Image (cartoon, rainbow, N blue to C red; front, side, top):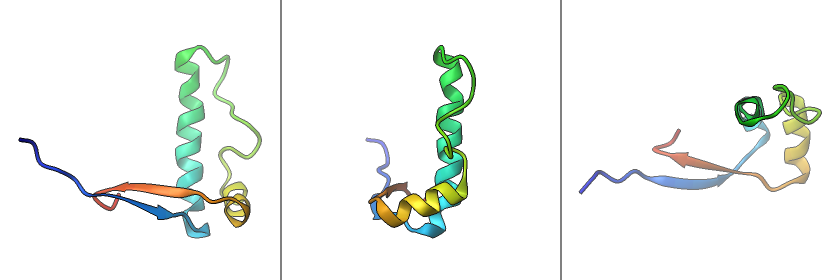
Amino acid sequence: MGSSKEVTLSKASESDSGRLAEISKKAFDSDVDFGAPNTNGPPGYDSDLFYSQMLRFLNCFLILVEDE
């Protein structure tokens, strides 16, 4: 059998906003590969400040595989 990896779920904090913005940008920018007219997402989709503000009001979580 293959090796198993540890998967954890943790609540995101404002210190995660930069990483969330980076992931969001990659996700929306890749939509162009599936027919989107350009690599733009909604307002703030690539902004650390946007995610810092949203994390104050929303419950966001990180899924970590082997602590990454």
